[in-house]
Amino acid sequence: MMEVAHQPYDIILPATSRVPILISIPHSGIEIPADIKTNYLPQAIEHIDDTDFYVDQLYNFASELDIIIIKAKYSRWVIDLNRSPQNTNLYDDGRIITSLTPTTAFDGSDIYKNENHQPNQEQIKSRIRLYYEPYHQKVKDLLIAIRDQFGTALLWDAHSIRRHVPTIQKEPFPDMILGTNDETSASKELIDVGLESLQSYNHTVTHNTPFKGGYITRSFGDPEKNIHALQLEMSKDCYMDDAELKYDQDRASAMQKVLRHTLCNLNKKLRCL
Image (tube, rainbow, N blue to C red; front, side, top):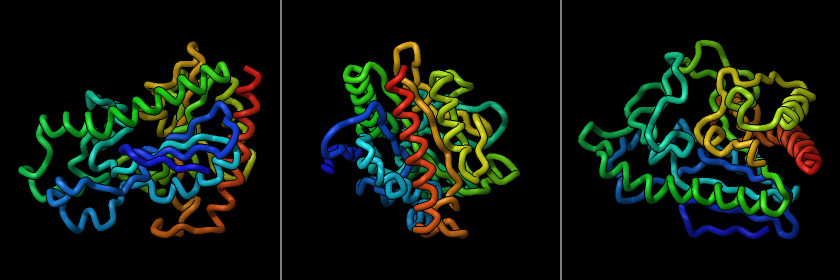
């Protein structure tokens, strides 16, 4: 496979053919630009807890399936690629959701040294221009190119989260959550295939509860224009150790079988639409 890296994202292209699927990994990035790094609390950026650690490693089999991957290089603490550029709320049920340019972690702890080190409106606009817009534009370009080639395209937005985040919900999360923005971001046929494939293994799977897809899924999913989008949120201990700190090869291998099975089935269904 060939890797291209000259933007705030990396693109991994299959060596030979392509299929009508694009995997987006917007939250595995860990880089923080040098010119703003000193604004953060040193203890916070030693381990950026809200990162989808190792999700890119988990999906490293995708090139074997001829799937293109785009993954962010920079941390969501620089700018969250899965939030609206207008910073509008994704949910209205009282849960704590970090913003476009977060000032706290999911647990509510500060990530900047003080308010004077937090980004102002001018700096937020700069981050949108430098890091946010290029990622979204590239996703758009790739999806249109895929649709032009195959007549249809599917965006698979890949995420992970701690098993238990009390600021979002009191109960632990299931193993996997398929988000379809209340069944509007993809065709029912693809949603059904995705759910059936994920549920065919011994895992707990929910649909749109408690996550129904972030801004990426909601903004790109347009089934009427033959562009579909599905978000998969996965509890980290499905592929990491119990402490959710280290990559667990055995757990990851088992999860890769589920993901491979699901993506292959979705590819088959796409070619029938």
